[in-house]
Length: 195
Image (cartoon, rainbow, N blue to C red):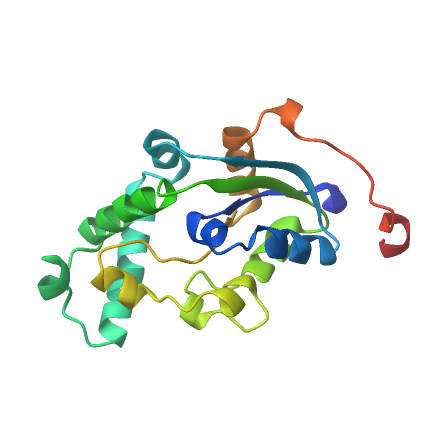
């Protein structure tokens, strides 16, 4: 495997666009030694986002279990708040909220390449729950949202950015969002001194 050539997908979500963070996010990625090899602003459709997120029961239950964990932490009764305590039913609700959020405004999609780009980009983004994200990460510096607040308002978490979680997920998402003609390989000036 060629670690320097690993690629990952990044989506700057509608809240990141509306807050004027495109340049800041790209700057952080490039300062880390990663390179942006494809970039485009677009307005996603509900169908595109529906097909972006997994539909399998395991993923949906995991999302619901995360919500239930937050409800327990903050002493919120999920039955009173959502009408159910079933992790799969809650996961389905959260998935619909995600779709609504992701189509609420334009986004920027990009391909990021570099050494361990999947892990490095995830590290730059910070925890998907902004209230738990480390200061210095994108989410830790620019979002204060939490799952408890988002769920209480029956909406997705506003966490600025999406980055592929695994190399396998990155491969799927890159093929889904970009054609090979849209990706441009090049060598950064400092690559010879960095590696």
